[in-house]
Length: 261
DNA sequence: ATGCCGTGTGAAACACGA
Image 1: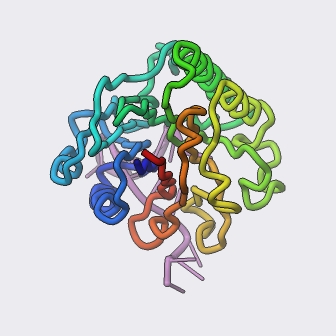
Image 2 (image 1 turned 180 degrees about the horizontal axis):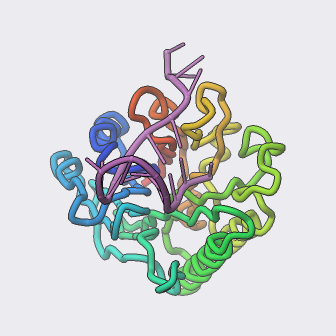
């Protein structure tokens, strides 16, 4: 089974590109982040016309997540147990959705950005990651052999090599120790990051500003974290860097993993 | 060339991203 994760930065602006990606990439499941659309605005036809079932969750112009599958899509769940909210009303944001696809619990996650180290959004990000860890731990405690994968934009660069120049990130989010500790804690809960070993030195995101892509100044912040039972089935992984090229590209590239049946 | 920020809202300027 081939599973991809991709922060598309607007599903409406990227509808044609997403369709073209499905046509050429032969993915069975696509986890999508940053829809930037509410449910009523979601372009179902992109997926319907290609034989993909799709579950999506969008509340407004921010965030938004979806899962498309051509190998079955059942028991879609919005959010996760204990997911923190944000804002004055502490409302849940559209940052998590999961579904059962061919026996695998696939999560599509858009981890909060954090904004600045002293911003309330940073504390929100850390709490969000910690509650996610608890939810995963509970899921694996119930079934240690569960096949599950956390796909998404984690907004954390776990290692120094995951940014082009650490000097550019002094005092910045994404590389701070608490964020990296939170990411590691997710792994310690019983998950393995399965893309890095197959894509050494690669990035998944390049800022639109400052010519980051042609300068090869990117970040590795998009991952697939698989449970042990699924991680042992990984055959290959790649990052579709071509997708970042040209007019109308998302600032993130798709991250694709092949799992043996 | 991969090329100097993009998307949504709403109709100018701002929120948000990382």
